[in-house]
Amino acid sequence: MCGIFGYKGISSDATNIVLNGLKKLEYRGYDSWGFASFQEGKIKIKKEIGRIPNYSTDFTSHLSIGHTRWATHGQVTANNAHPHTSKDKKVVAVHNGIIENVSELVEKYKLEKETETDSEIIPLLINHFMDEGYSFVNATKKACLQFNGSYAIALINKDSEELIAVKMGSPIILGIGENEFLLSSDIPALLEHTNKVVYLEDKDFVHINKHISISKIDSETKIIPDIKTISWNADSAEKEGYDHFMLKEIFQQPSSIRKTLDGLVENGFPSLNLKKIHLEDFKRITILGCGTSWHSGLVGKFLIESLARIPVDVEYASEFRYRNPIIDKDTLILAISQSGETADTLAALREAKRRGASVLSICNVVESSIARESDDILYTRAGPEIGVASTKAFTTQVTMLYLLTAQLVLKNKSLSENKVKEMIVDIKKIPELIELVLKEEKNIKVLANKLSKKNNALYLGRGIQFPIALEGALKLKEVSYIHAEGYPAAEMKHGPIALIDKNMPCVVIATKDILTYDKILSNIQEIKARGGEVIAIGTKGDFKLKELVDDIIYVPETRYSLTPLLSIIPLQILSYHVALLRSCDIDKPRNLAKSVTVE
Ligand code: F6R
Image 1: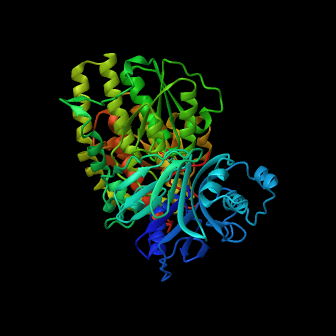
Image 2: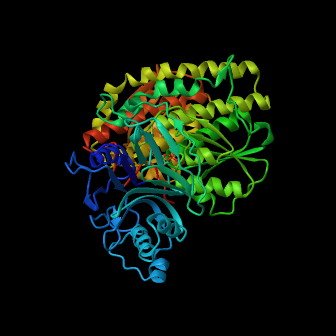
Image 3: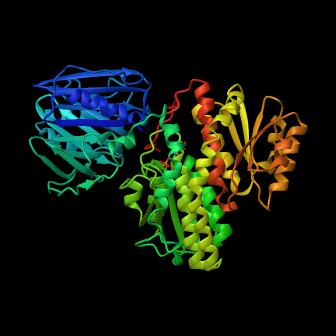
């Protein structure tokens, strides 16, 4: 949610470096953008609405900050775009997060705002303290102590070639290059400059002048930075020949799953190497997540309850902390998040910890806030997910939940050791099976053509495929703007059946299983009897299903508990091609942002 990029160093091309960094962060917000560059006591500022053009400037500068915005407070206008400045344009700031006590501060310090944003308060208040005689550093620290809310801020000022960064609740990472320092909201944008980074902690205050010093906003004591080396390379943040990140990421799923499994299986058994959490200590699990991660949590509930026989609740993180949840020492909190920065999930995790719960997380982004605040962490190894619509994050999360289930089964002895070994043999085959599904892209494109002309769609599934119906519908609405609903197939007759007619295509996940397959065939007949059109996802060789439906996409056979990892693939490809046919901005759907760092 909003991207920040900053540069100070030996290069005189700071502005273009920042613009280039912002382009890589654009997936975090793309309403408007802007930069501010310092040159000998002058600051050049540019702010525009819309996407960052292929703009390059010949303004030489060694110090620049920039921002790409996802509007929260104030409309999308050039005036509301960042950077924001003090009245005399002395102090210049870019901000990600929300300052909650703006009106209070405006009144207390008699400040005059000129934009609708909360962020403008930052340079105004810092400038106010500088006018009282405080240095840039001390005025910034003093101002930060007045702010309520969350922020990652980068700041420059007209009088000196200094760069300041502060973190409280919103992400910002410091990159350390050869004779240069960079600031970024996320790792991928840094990779072409350096793989040496410092994950800033809450309250960290970075001051870069001739040298760098890190302290806390409420202390003078210097902190020795913990410099980490990132193993992702710069290519992993590029499209590598694909037209869109979403397509690249869909096709990366076999390798992402292989990488996620790597090192977590030993002698045919799951080996999750948890350091602090002892799985045998818990009688219940509460899963927290948002959006796609919540959907993978629903698959997790199905797996853990049916195989490990442990009760599981799956909660929207955004609802959890506002309803006085019942958490006790027997409950394990399992937080799921690709980015590890989703504000709702982070807030729910903190609430659970405040109530004494132990937290295990499944995250993709190493050292993200959720990862760092959890007692133990299971990393999916999907690599950077840049497309706003989550794809490889989902399948790697489900892979991890399957491994966790297998580990719980072993602990609980709910199945024999041999059965657990068989579970592991089967998940290892999944990447190859996904490769077969990916070969169906041509056939799926034909169906995309039909679906692209509709305004609504119903996605139906039962059992473990119900979350896949939800996820398939979410993918379609996010990238193609076609209204889609996911429903448990049997619930259709309790209401949504009223919607069925020739204009309401139904995508039904009807893979073979012993529990609900026959029932879902009846649900399909109910749709057909009312003139509805059915696209089915079925198990290869299922001719009975083919006879019943208008169109079918086959996925290979696998064990029931692994079917979601196959059935979601054609639904991702379908959404991608529908969106392409409707000329939608696939990697940056309107109004969305990749990592939602505001509640
Ligand atoms: C959907 C999507 C979102 C995210 C949600 C949670 O395609 O990307 O629904 O799944 O915002 O994000 P993370 O997993 O980063 O916590």
